[in-house]
Amino acid sequence: MGRRNELSTFEFGRNAGDLEGEVSRGARAIVVLPDIRQRGGLGEDAEARLEEGQGLARAIGIEVVDAFIVPIRAVRPGTLFGEGQVERLAVSIAQSEAELVIVDGSLSAIQQRNLEDKLKRKVIDRTGLILEIFGERAATAEGRLQVELAHLDYQAGRLVRSWTHLERQRGGFGFLGGPGETQIEADRRMIRNRMARLRRELEQVRRTRGLHRERRQRAPWPVIALVGYTNAGKSTLFNRLTGADVMAQDLLFATLDPTMRAIRLPGIEKAILSDTVGFISDLPTQLVAAFRATLEEVTAADVIVHVRDISNPATAQQKAEVEEILTDLGVIGDEAEPVPIIEAWNKWDLLADDERLTREAIIAQGIPDRTVVPISAVTGEGVDALLDVLSDLLTGGAQVLDLTIPASDGQRLAWLHAHGEVLAETAGEDGETLRVSVRLSPADLGRFTHL
Image (cartoon, rainbow, N blue to C red):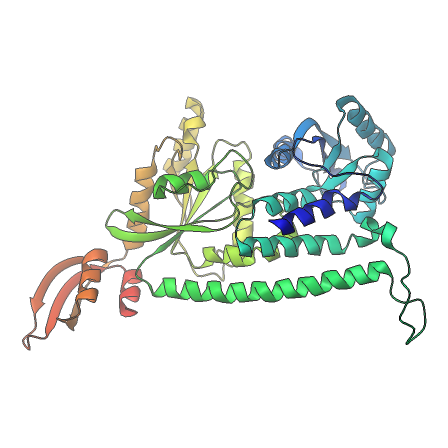
C-alpha cells in the first residue's frame, strides 16, 4: 500500500500550496453541500445528499464537526461561493476549529486554490474525497492500479495549482540552447508516462479477466451478481449467503474489489455469487473509466440481484443512479441482452409497521420487469425466499431432452444428475451408450454442450 500513501500525501499535502502538513484520520472537518439553483438545485434530495457527504467523510476516519447546505444562485468562477458565503465558511471553521473543508461538489483547480487562500485551510471536493477512500480501500493489485490511474488523471489537470512552487525553469544541457523544460512540464510528462504504463497493465488485467470470464461461461455454474448503491447491504447479504467474511460495515464503499464465492441453491448444486463495488451519485468520471473492468463482471451474470436499502428516504433516487450506470455498461437498455433482475429490498427490519404495509402494497401491485423480494441481510428474514426466486429464474424454461452419451462418460452423466432432473436412464442397444431423459434449463443445456 506504499503507492496509496504516496498519493494520499500528494492529495492532502502537496495540493494545499503553502499549507503545511497533511490531513489524516481523526481530522476535524466541515462538510459543505453547494445547492446550485441555476442548475435546477437538489430539491428534496438535499438533506439526504448532505448526509451522504458526511458519510463519505466518516468512511475515511474524518470527524465531521459541522455540515450545512449553501444555496448558490450564481456560480462564482473564482470561488464557487459568494463573498458572504465564504465568510460564513470562515466563521464555521473558527467556531468548530476545523482543519479541513470538504465541498460535496465539483471544484475547479482555481476555485480550490482560491478557497484555500481565503480560508487558510485545506479544501477538497467530492471527487478528491472519493478517490481518497478508494485509495485506502483497494486491496488487490488490480484495484490499486485502477485507483492510481484515477488519482493521476484527477491530479494532471491540477498541477498548475498544486505545484506552483515548482514552476521554475530548469537549465538545459546546452545542446539546443534556450531555457530548457519547466518543472511543471516535466511533471506533466512524468504523469502522462506513468498513466500510459498503468493503462497497459490494466489492459492486460482486462484480457486476463476476460479469459477467466470465458472459462466461467464454459463451466457448468450460473453467475449471480450483487449490485446496488453503496452501503445498501450487498456485502452483508454476500456473507450470509456464502459464509464469507467480506468487510461489511455501516460505511460507504466498504467493498471495492470484486469477490466471488460458490453457493448452493434449491435444485442447483453450485452457483457463483459475485459482490461488486457500490455505486454512488456523481461518481468521478475517472473512477467510472478506471473501474469499468471490475464492473464488467456484471455484464457476464446470468442473474442480477439489485440490493436496495429500502429504509433510506432516497431509495428511489439511489435506484435511478444504479440503473443509469447499468445502462452505461450496456447491461440494461433497449440494445442490451435481457438479463433477469431481482430487486432485494434490504433492511426490511428497519421499516416501521406503516411503512411495511405501504411497501407490501407496492409489491402486490407488481413492478414491470422486476421480481421484488423483501429481505433483511442482518436477521435473515426473506433470504430463503430470495434463494427460491433465484432458483426458479435459473431453472425457468426448462425442457425435457433425450440425450445419448457414452456409457463410459461418467463426468457428463454426473453433471446431468447434479444440474438437471434426470427422468429416465436406459442403456443403448450397443451397450456402449446411455439414453438419458433429463429436464434442463436453456442455460444449463448451453453449459452441457461445452463440457
